[in-house]
Image (tube, rainbow, N blue to C red; front, side, top):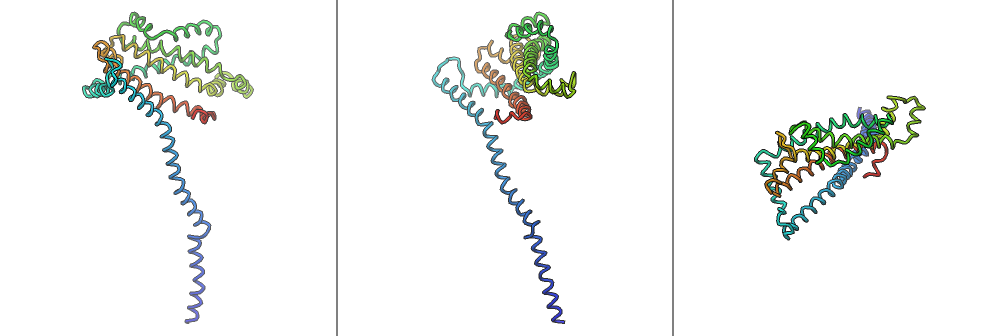
Length: 308
């Protein structure tokens, strides 16, 4: 019996050793250990890469903002202008507008007006631009008119809208439409004109004609130009809205009304606070909407690396 027990124990030793080896030192265990080490090594590097990208995107705007504030403070300290307030005074004006409940309603009314006006401008301007590319006589007639209206300052459009529609919300929206629709239509037309004819011929040879050709060939090829047209339309519409709110007496206040109140009261701090709000909205819309859309469109065409 002792001899038998000893032989059995010797036979069991390789099994246990082999089992342990297959669990920790075999091929599967080595793969798991390697993948774990790779995860440990790649996680900090991925985090560092993300941090570098975020820093590369945020550092230039923050540096530019800091430079503007420093130059502004220097100009105030040196008394280059008797009417120039300090950055702190403008900040106090914004804080006061926030505390008395006038900042958010004014900002909300202006944003809502511009969003609704921009949506209506897109619904009119994009089909109009596509139609001009398809109907040559219509383009001959409307093309110069749209270019002329696009070159008009918004201040020239406000009296026309006020006389026609009165001091109402309709007049404000009319000014936004007159400022944004020509820009979008002209931009869409230019984007379609810049599509290489080779792509259109290739699409027609593959059966993409008519609506199918427009949906699957023309619109995707002109998409970068469409994004540029929409960005320009938003810019023109936002500027036209500020002019309309500055001149018209609408029942709902906006940022333009704040700007006009500062002008009438001779309060430069309120005027500059309104200007800061206008610039902040423009930068926010550009950073949160148009820049990501443009990067995605360019990335889909292999052009994103050139714009980084």
